[in-house]
Image (tube, rainbow, N blue to C red; front, side, top):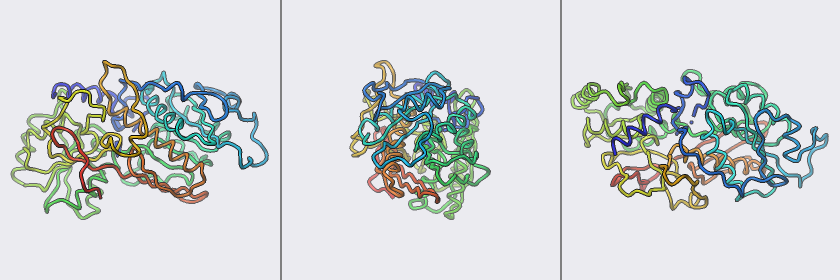
Length: 432
């Protein structure tokens, strides 16, 4: 099991880079390393053919570089915008902007696309959905966004942090826009989004802040150590946890461990164990992946409470191998989305699992992106019904959405608390 996890960790590190809360999708290596590891380029969910069709009420998929006229024709729209306001019975036109399937982030985009189409197939009503493929760069996405904004009523995308940041800073957001990633943050603050934009991407930073809220209600007195490696998303998670915990009156020190040969440094772990014994912290926050958490647990023992993000859950709810467990993490607490934890959740049970090849292991990163696609469509659907404020019992968490025309927007996702029991993460009885 440990060897398998190490292989998974090494593979994820190559494409690491939404909690995650969970993601940067820019095509250069430096940006990709800065994103939440929801982007593993392995198993690609199969696209349900029944969900792809043209015409009114159908989903239209357009290739990169399609002209405005081609977009309009494929979506059944007039070549030029109508001068008069659409009639009440006119369909609501949605455009989904995703990197093309043959690009560097094809598997990630495909997972989101499949989730969107799955949700759309169950709740079409008067929605006309077009999927527009773009290049991977922020500039490509910005051009596609500008053209789509002139033709569609609601836009879903972009998918990368860099593209979301570019669109948010462009000054050209005039239609309701459901961004699929969080924008890059300037310093320790958060970017102010345009009035018509919601950022609904899974965010490792937000997950870390939610863990801090959880810890504040349960922890014993004493200092907290927030542990990460030099990987960008881990450092961000540790910092986000620290900032939120300090706001709540807790004392947090961040510690960074080196990772020679893709494993935590043995001398570093020994030094950490010594500090734990001498300083007796109240708990540790782990901005680590599952294999690293196993290593750390073996070094510090089982007595000290450990908390982490969704990235210490390498499993999906599709558990074909009963021996595929992590008993080494029993007692460790984490948060993750319902899609990964709660098979009996009403929203989760409503949607099918994406199909994968028999010889491939279910990929938790792609599963989270599939779930994000489902909830992104459900949010867009709520906005299409002209609901300015509403809640969604989502597959990525309990969602609160507020988008007032011309006013401020608000979005919050509350994920599920869990604890490892018998090698599996299990939702806790009490959820704050």
